[in-house]
Amino acid sequence: MSPAPSSEHLYSTVTRVVAETIAVLLFFAVLVLQTVNILFRYTKIRAPEMWVEDFSKYALIWIFFLMWHLADRGNQHFAVDLLVQRLSPGLRRAIELFRHLAAIAFATVVIVSAVRFIPNVMGYPTQSFQWLPMGVVYFIIPIGLSLVLVERVRMFYQTLKLKP
Figure: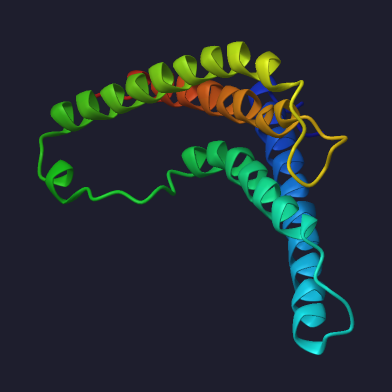
């Protein structure tokens, strides 16, 4: 009998599956809608739908914020680490801790700002979808950065536990 998964493992699995599923569905929708719009544009079957551009823009924003924490988790962000690799292990660890603290501070500031900002734009509709408030589009910012915040706190403690 295998041991029960830890809450940390469960959190990682659930957030990965949910974020990847939503991102893939959004990307697939963008791909299909843009393909149809290109077909309309060049075959003159009918005029391209203007709302597809806005949907694509909003979907890509959502995909970015949903996937950010997974890139953090896998340490898959672009980085130039030539200098850092030449440092002593202790200094390298200190820089890594500083990077995590800076990301935690950034995520916290943006989450607080977004939570204050979003109610102000809930009364404004998006350009192509009069029924969709801009606040709904921006709501992914505190969601995505909350995931980043949790991930960076986890990474900070993992780095802190490592021996220099």
